[in-house]
Every structure is written in C-alpha cells, then in structure tokens.
Image (cartoon, rainbow, N blue to C red; front, side, top):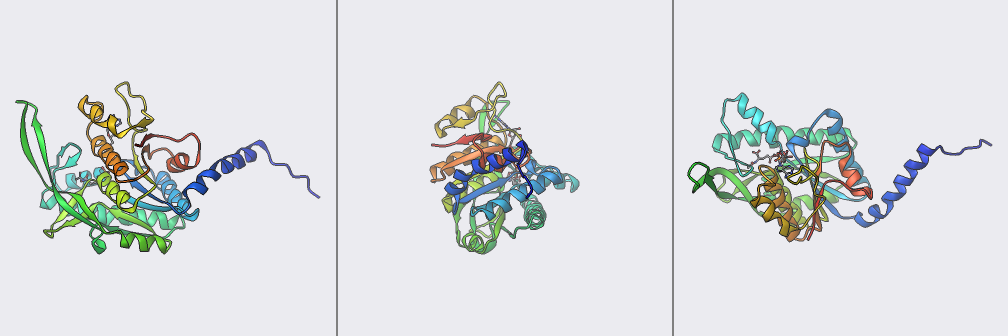
Length: 299
Ligand SMILES: Nc1ncnc2c1ncn2[C@@H]1O[C@H](COP(=O)(O)OP(=O)(O)O)[C@@H](O)[C@H]1O
Ligand SMILES: CC(=O)N[C@@H](CCC(=O)OP(=O)(O)O)C(=O)O
C-alpha cells in the first residue's frame, strides 16, 4: 500500500475549498448579474479567467447573467471613423451615427467575443441586446450641464442616450433554465422605434432589479470606490453617495456606477459590489472567500 499524505500546498487548497462551502450553499439557485466593463476586458488571460468564472458559477448552481460595456472600444472605433465624441456626467453624447457605431461595436463585436470566450471555457452562452424579444424598452435621457465659464445651468441634449424603463425578463429566464449564460449588450429600442445607447452600468442595474438578483457585480479598472486619499472605501450605504458626488470624490464613469448600485439596492438587490476586473478571478475571490474585495453597497 502507498503511504499518501498531502503536502501543505494541497492542504491549503482543500481549506480554501471548504471555506467556499457556506457560500456555495447560500447562493445556489440565485441570480448574479455581472457587468463586465470595457476597461476590465484586458489581456487574453484575464478574458479567459472571466469566462471560466462565469462557467464555474453556472456549474455550482448560480445563474450568472452578463451585461457588458465597451466604452473604450466604441471610442477607438469612432476615432478610426473620424467621428467626434464627448461625455456628460459619464454618458456619451450620442447622435444617430454614433448610436449605429455603438450598436455595431457592442452588439456586433464585443457581445460575440464574450460568447466565444465562455464557449472556449466549456460553457454555453447566448449573446443578445436589449432589443431581442423586447428584453429592454428604452426612453430618452435628458440632462443638465453646468456651464463651467459662467456657472449657468444649460440644457444639454444627449441625443440617443437611453435609460431602461421596462424589462421583460422572460427571455433571460428561459435561457437560464436551459443552462445558458445570457450575455447582454446595452442597446435597446425606444417606443419611438429608435436605437438607444444605454450606459452599461445602468442597463445591468435595471436587469438586476427586474430579476430580483441576489448580487450585482460591476467589474471595472479600479479596486473600487476610492476616497480623496485614494484609499479603498470597502462599504458604502446608499445615503453616503450624494455627498461623495457633491464634494467631487466621485466623478466621470463612477457616477453612473454608484447611481446604479443605489437604484439596484432600492429595487431589492441584496448588495451591489464594484470590483477590480483586472485582478485574476476577482469574482471568485469576492464570492467564495472571507476576504472579499472592492466596494460593497448595501442598505
Ligand atoms: N472616487 C473614485 N474612485 C474610483 N474611481 C473613480 C472615482 N471617481 C472617478 N473614478 C473613475 O471611474 C472610472 C471607472 O468608470 P468607467 O471608466 O466608466 O469604467 P468602466 O468602463 O469599467 O465602466 C475609474 O477608472 C476612475 O477613473
Ligand atoms: C450612453 C453611454 O455612455 N453608453 C456607453 C455604452 C458602453 C458602456 O457603458 O461601456 P463601459 O461600461 O465600458 O463604460 C458608451 O457609449 O460608452
């Protein structure tokens, strides 16, 4: 008979696995909405890690629903095509041509790439946008912008920037029930038939709310919300957010991100987490270990 005793490395791995047990039991059967930001889609190894994490979640009985962005990728395509682009409060001002290019990049290119990565990791994914089966109905967003020179408020028309006003979850439910991971691009039709470009965080939050998701994860390119001393704020309450906006601690793309967290939590999502998608297997560390990561927003 061979005398077999596992070495310390193997024992440490086993301990990590048993640490995951209560989380596996707690989350089995629940839905996690994962927003995969354009900045978080880094090197091929990171893309593979992300896809493996989604497949693993599905394998252990959690239903991951992926909503992706692609802001930097849209920006690069607009530049190549010589189309100017600017942002107001983290939202891209979108004329008809920009909306068409955003749809091409998001629903045509990135969406199918992510489906491919999940397939390569051994999972089954279907790529859709808010247009498919009437998943999301959009309405035009209106914004005000402060004129920095005169301190006067002036109205800025963001064009075909939309926000989700209705979500029909039936397509997502049937995909999940069939063992498929839905991958959703943040593009939808308005009641007027136009194509609307929706901030991917906002789209993910609306879908998380409609699904009654247990968790909303926003994967980005920073460790979480940083304070003025650039230190990570690990826990935030929805009531904290207004002050962080007012004193300029959070700016740009972090504004729709935190607005989304607050809206999702108010819509019944247990907690929303902003975390660093550049960290390998960031999702697994957050979900299945005691350490956690990123900024957790909870009521
Ligand atoms: N207080 C803050 N903490 C962290 N990031 C912040 C903060 N305020 C603004 N940001 C910016 O928000 C960005 C994340 O938003 P965004 O660029 O839209 O990411 P994504 O493409 O992943 O959605 C960060 O890269 C950072 O530049
Ligand atoms: C209206 C609006 O701003 N739409 C975004 C949609 C993509 C997005 O949100 O991508 P990230 O999550 O990678 O930033 C845009 O055009 O960039």
